[in-house]
Image 1 (cartoon, rainbow, N blue to C red):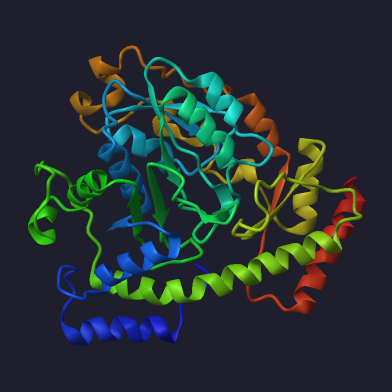
Image 2: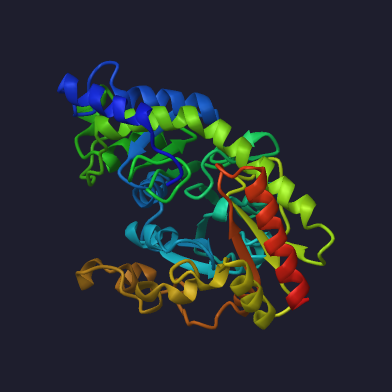
Length: 385
């Protein structure tokens, strides 16, 4: 969570004073935010959800993904990317990232099998995927793309906002994101039909509240947000362009001030479009990365405890549901799907991740803060290289 201020407090007060906390009413906060978010990212169909995880599962289901299908996911992402696939009844196929810490298009190309129907690129840690190459692979194999933008709110690729390159784009407004209402998420859908299915996935009675729909009703779950969350997000959206602009400026300054250290930056597919929430250096060895991280006081991307595939215990153990009959890993329809998971299955990813140091940036830093941070990085580089 980067910033919550008086504007958000006043927005919540406005909702509470109105007594209208339920999202369905004319001119409501959620409805207005959905229109504002659509205008911001350049999407026509937007639906708020209870979380980024719900957004991913709803988006996949809206495209017809289910039992018998495989969905390619990267070896490094929050586990919800994989569990969302399982939530639809499908099976996640885990493939390597590349040096950019995002999904490797060549690995996707090699991994496509007869049951593969979709791929989920993840704009990880605010780093932007190589969407040009990934779209080419998807076209070649006739795959759906669901963009996971949960960690890249406000990011863009070649001048176009992330989430709009795919059949669906998913966002998270969790407490830890650069735009937050505590929890919450959103789906942007390419077609009206998919959007209507997301609405019902988000609210089992959504078609009653939203008016006439061409989509037949079905028994969807409910994952609505309240007007309180919608009101907070409206204020957060006003902050995000300026916040990201500051972070990009800070990152550019640190890169310039440490350019002669011998450190290797992780590749960037669009430096102008990334969220710049962190700065990444790849060290020659795991040992050097660990020492560098210790001296700088930063993290290692492969050691977060929850973002790398070998830490996804429920997936590795193939426990897909509390009830065995509803567990996709045990469904007859998925018998021919690939699910031979083991902790060492993606050694290329593990090597990259365990050699990559991640330095978190703060939008509130002043010139003195940046100067001090650059000195710390320079001193650490001198000690380990």
